[in-house]
Image (cartoon, rainbow, N blue to C red):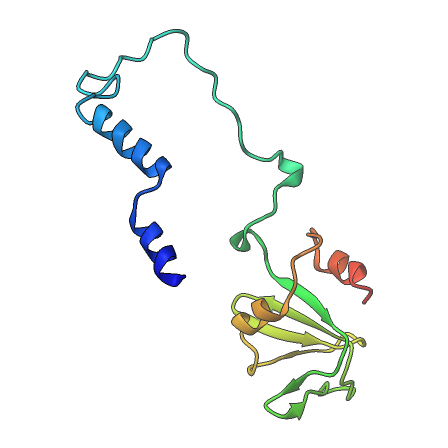
Length: 147
């Protein structure tokens, strides 16, 4: 039984035979447009350029146009196996993490700020989500984040 199936598979099918016949007929034919110089485009009236930029109210400022970025960090912050606490009031949760001029600062709920050298801007960028708003002043941003 397997011998018959193999023998049938060695013979070309009807579709294969028709394909071979048609490709033999078309072998010496050249598609239209091959071998001719390309047609010159017509010089009609110029097309108007489309402004593909967003309107100013929808544009997001680039990183060099911002003085800094900040994000809330509600849970305790653990760095190098040590929980970070505010040096002035001892708070250890509900931080604002500020990234500005290549430095990272922590701000507690009481408004105390401390420079954190164990965090860099790469860490900040990995852990921050997309910005949901931009603000003209630092105080506006603090109000927006509930501090």
